[in-house]
Image (cartoon, rainbow, N blue to C red; front, side):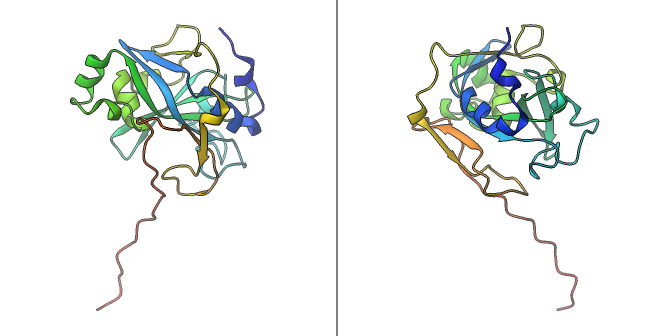
Length: 206
């Protein structure tokens, strides 16, 4: 299965991100309806993006093809997952920030330590944990069934009036770019936390 809008120019990544709301991701016995996503553009366009300074061994998946999964490790303990979009060679990706578990509740609860249902996939690391995914998903297709996760559309597109937008969460640059999108009224949407730079201890004598 292919979706031409996933291959739109990288500059249109925000539109692509909005389109993914209401889609489902499924893996290892769990299905999650996406309720929150975040857009990241490519080289030289978005200082919050992993691809801002060009390709590296870590981010090379972001440069295509569209529909593949970009997984990265954060804070030395969590995996986060993105859907690559844009034309091949133009880096862009949509971070899967949160969702509601619609199938496989018991499996997700076990993986998430019996967290409340609204919290099972409420945040990008929790979503990946609930799906039972990790590094092995990096670079695989989310569209054709060859990889560990499958991305599928809803029966009908989400009503645009139900989509809200605001600043991205926890980024160290481009703090106020309104490229986080979520479904209004969904309990699974993660709370907003602006990035706060860490203060280095003073070396001055007291």
